[in-house]
Amino acid sequence: MKKNISVELASRVKHLPPYLFASIDKMKQKAIEKGIDLIDLSIGDPDIPTPSHIVNAMKKAIQNPVNHRYPSYEGMLSFREAVSCWYKKRFDVKLDPHKEILSLIGSKEGIGHIPLAFINPGDIVLVPSPGYPVYATGTLFAGGKTFFMPLREENNFLPDMDVIPKNILKKTKIIFLNYPNNPTSVTAPSQFFKQVIDIALKYNIIICHDASYTEIYDNEKPLSFMQIPGAKKAGIEFHSLSKTYNMTGWRIGFAVGNRDVLAGLGKIKTNLDSGVFQAIQEAAIVALNTDNTVLSEIRNIYQERRNALYIGLKKLGMHLIKPKATFYVWVKVPLKFDSMGFVSHLLNRAGVLATPGNGFGEEGEGYIRFSLTAPVARIKEAVDRISRVL
Ligand SMILES: *Cc1c(COP(=O)(O)O)cnc(C)c1O
Image 1 (cartoon, rainbow, N blue to C red):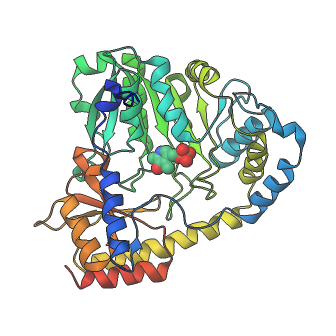
Image 2 (tube, rainbow, N blue to C red):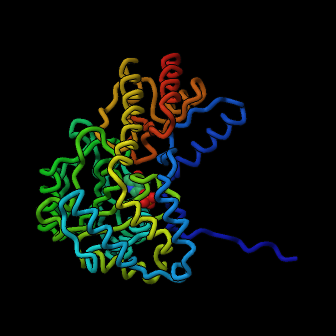
Image 3 (cartoon, rainbow, N blue to C red):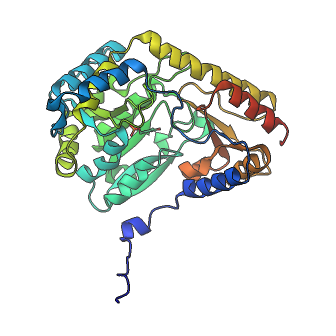
C-alpha cells in the first residue's frame, strides 16, 4: 500500500492571516461541553426568521420548471428591475437595470471576487481596519497588497484619508469602505464620501462601498454611497438581502453603480459561477417590495435590544460607542485586558460570548463586538451576568 499523497496548501492559503474565529469556536465548544448556559452574542447572523411572505414566494417559485435551469450570471431582468425600483424608492437613485446592476451569490461573493478583475500583482488595495475580513483575503487571493486604513474613535471610525501617502495612492487600484460599519456600528456623512470620490477620481481608484446594513438603523436613515454626486463615476456599491430581510442562508445580493467596473466583475463571474437560483431571485423580488411595516418591526426589535445592551453596559461604566446602525455594539475592553483576554473572561466567568475586536484587524485590538442577535431577555441577562464579573 502506498502512503497518502502529501497535501500541501498553496502559499496564498498558507499565508492567510490566522483565523481568530476558529479559536473562538473551540472556546465556545468547550464552554458548551462544560454545560454552561451560553449567551452567544458573537455571530453576525440574524436569529429572526425570513418574513413569511418571502418564504411563500419561494415555495411558489420553486414549483416552476423554468426556474430549475441555469440562471443568467447577471441576474434576471425582473430582479434587476426590482433592485432599480428599490434604489429609486429608498435612495432616490436612478440605476439602469441593464448595465448598472449585477446579481451576486451574496455580497461576500462579489466582494471576494472583485480584486480578481482589477488587481495585478503588487497593486494596492485600501482596506479598513477593523473591517470585514473578506476585503483583505480577496485582495491577497488576487495577488494584491493591502494597505490598512485605521478606523479610530477620535475620527468617528472614518479612515483619515489625508494621512495616506501619495505614493501609496498612486499604486492603489481599489478602496473598500463599509458604512453603516461592521464592526463599529457608525455611519458615514456625505462629506466623507465626497472626499473619497475626489481622491478616487484624482488617482484613478475604484471605490467599492459595502452597504449591507443600510436598512438596520436606529433613528437616522443611513446614506447610500450612490446618492453622492460623482459616485457612479468612481465606483460601485455592494448590497445584500441577508441582513435586511434575515436571508443570510439564501445567498443573494447585488452590486450597483459604475458599468465598467460591474462589467469587469461580471467577467470573473461568468467564468466562475452560474448565477443565483432563479427561485431565490423570484423570492428576492418579493423581498425588495416588502411593506415598510415589516421592516420597521425588525428595526424595532433591534432597537429594543440595542438599548438594552447599550444602556445596560453604559450603566456598568463601560466605554462603548453609541451605535447608529447595524446590529452590533462596539465596546472598549477594560484596561487590564486585551480583546481576547476579555472575551475569554466573559465566556468563562459569565457565559457570554462576544467577538474580539482584533479578529477584524489589528486596529480592532482593545475592543470587542457584541451582536444583537439574541432575544432582549437574553441580552438583559447577559448585562446582568457581566455586571457580576467586571
Ligand atoms: C454580512 C456581511 C456581508 C456579507 O453578506 P452576504 O450578502 O450574506 O454575503 C458583507 N459585508 C459585511 C460588512 C457584512 O457584515
